[in-house]
Image 1 (cartoon, rainbow, N blue to C red):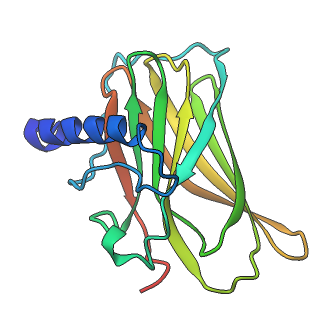
Image 2 (image 1 turned 180 degrees about the vertical axis):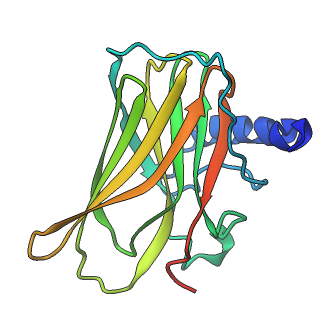
Length: 196
């Protein structure tokens, strides 16, 4: 992969601009910002900066896009991928966007976001919805203040709770991000479409 493919300056400028503009918007269902481009996988440099072992932070859930399955104007170049986009601001605020998170079409859920040492954990707990309208893909955005520039493993998990209160645990996505060398980027994994 050439330098031009990996570090596309227009992509970095677009995602930075869209992130800045979107946080000034007041609409709760404004689409989550990202720019269609070829998904990249970061290469771990040999002298990566590691965060302190005792680092403990808590983040916030900022919001989600509307269902992209029913709104074809919101379909994007990532429709066959599950992705994680991030922007690490100079003041240490890390914004993470989980692209194409599969939830119910009328989801009832809560999230928690935390950092323990070098692991960023996003936990989604979704309860069964009686809407019976199928699944949707959403873009969920999170923010964590005070994150030092270092290498982190991001683990996104989901617990689905059935009507009889049984919980099924899923690992939705795992990605390694290096904020010391790439303050903003996107990584993707292939995803099987939930609907056609």
